[in-house]
Image 1 (cartoon, rainbow, N blue to C red):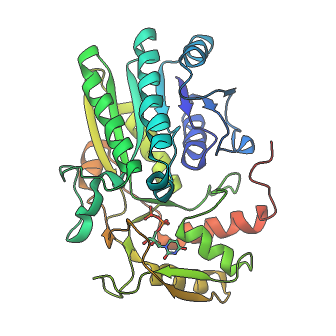
Image 2: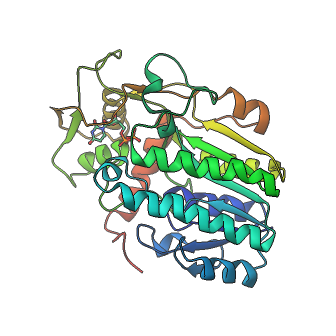
Length: 328
Ligand code: UDP
């Protein structure tokens, strides 16, 4: 299949493009390179364009005879969304709207959507999160993704088939070392701890030690980006025109900030200076997926561990540490 991969130059999108190509599809990457990397587009054609550009989207769909869409193009920094919410609604909501308008105009009825556990807001406090947990996002980012999901779900009425994949914390890098996580600026825990281990930053700050968790630091369900990519390909095969479904993608078990830092020290064999700091606004204490529905419906099980994530991300950093993430 010719699959339009919006945001395919980004972290998760580029790994999914690779998995699509490996499964025999043609991933046509559509990206404005605002946060994506041109070097990460290696597995199919590249089309430069903005997700809000309806004319360009339609032209690219025609040119490549697109049959299905994987939609990653979005702004994705929770903290930034609280200071510039309109930017998040413009890209994530208006952009998804334009994409759906283009798909409807061209009769494309299959989409796999990159969603997030951020739509659940504070609900992760007590137990693992299932898909029927009410969506009560606490950030404009989470709200924008939730609205985009609703647009896709409501579009079943004109025949759209949609699968929303709600990721927990994506981490790790391609096992072949070709692509990996390279954000500028970097805000995610695992790459930042690795930067500290590599001496690229002096320390790692622990955002809050007084959470109601086993060691007082926040617990997250980290999932390997290669597992995420496999789930996307499985979801694409199961999209049914006129139907919508949402699945949580996680491992079902969480790691605390302290556990992540200790795992990096152990795996990299380097010291990491950790400094206690204030809580980061908007952080729920615990977010862990109940992955049962994705397993039942997609046959998906995360097979890679936190150690696999840290090892692959460390290899990518060591091999590409001097890579300018904005290099064309
Ligand atoms: N975190 C931290 N120090 C950092 C970056 C993140 O303690 O420098 C914590 C953060 O508060 C959260 C967890 O690590 O509890 C994972 O954060 P990340 O930004 O990687 O992902 P998020 O859960 O926000 O999607």
